Image 1 (tube, rainbow, N blue to C red):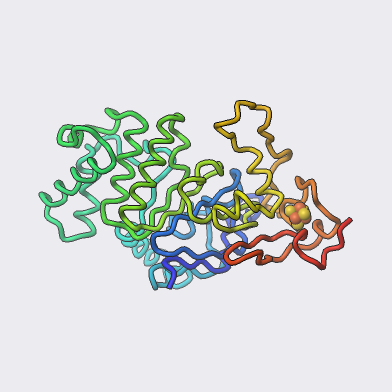
Image 2 (cartoon, rainbow, N blue to C red):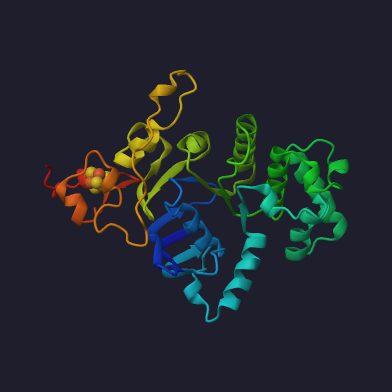
Amino acid sequence: MALLVVNDLRTEFKTDSGRVQAVRNVSFQLEQGEALGVVGESGSGKSQMMYSIIGLLAENGIVESGKILFDGKDISPSQFAKKKEYDEFMREIRGNSMAMIFQDPMTFLNPVLKVETQLIEPMLNHTDMTKEQAREKALDLLRKVGIPSPEKRITQYPFEFSGGMRQRIVIAIALANNPKLIIADEPTTALDVTIQAQVLELIDDLKRESNSAIIMITHDLGVVAKLCDRIAIMYGGKIVEIGTDKDIFYNPKHPYTEGLLRCISNPEDDDEKSLTPIAGSPPDLLNPPKGCPFVDRCEKAMRVCKDYEPEVTDISKGHQCACWLLDRRAVKQ
Ligand code: SF4
């Protein structure tokens, strides 16, 4: 059985202007040891989809419907009679078998606690390790993520580290209890370009060593190119295309995926002008479009796209796309 099964997930946010339909009937699966990239612009629903899974939605967010199965257990919020029970259950899961790496390490790390405390606490809270055993493991984790002189550095505070080193500490904390699933939300966005490459390489090495599954959330297709086995493209709260890295990079079917690919810089090509941003802005999810969410920005839109939502078409095993261009019933005009 797959490690994570998400079925027809729907998440909304209550606001003064109405309900924002952030995640709209999303389904996917993830196997143990697999790396899935979830790619889309801000507001596409990618982060809210993951917060729905890991139980970290903001107060006004509600998982309206859908099923989430993790490691054979039903972890859908609807399974719990009270929110408090759900929050306690998910806190335990997050400390053990699921871990999250956030975009900005400073919002995750506690500035007034030494790195040592922040590393050993999850082990003391969720395992029966002694303090000495947890400290030994913390030193090992710091070595593993490439922090030099760990015996000295473990006694320091987060502000004594550079941005890249802080993200390495966050990764070490995420690995502390050998999670089955690591969710990384834009883990390199706050870092400069050379450090970004090092952190991605580190995540790639750890993935191979640990056999943890990884979900990498990013707005940049280039980030997932090396790291991910499969890629889901999100737009307007939906997965509009999903497939292997080869499907997405060499045989993209959705016009939005094609647009994202045109935005990636090729390191062998110095011609900056070849980067073409996608014109227009994402749909308003307070009032999402009736038909295809990409219709207002799509150069290939047909009349049917405005009024009817495209169904998912199977292109090959594991490669799916929701676009009327792939549906024989569409009247092309
Ligand atoms: Fe473009 Fe229509 Fe396909 Fe949407 S369904 S991506 S508007 S062609």
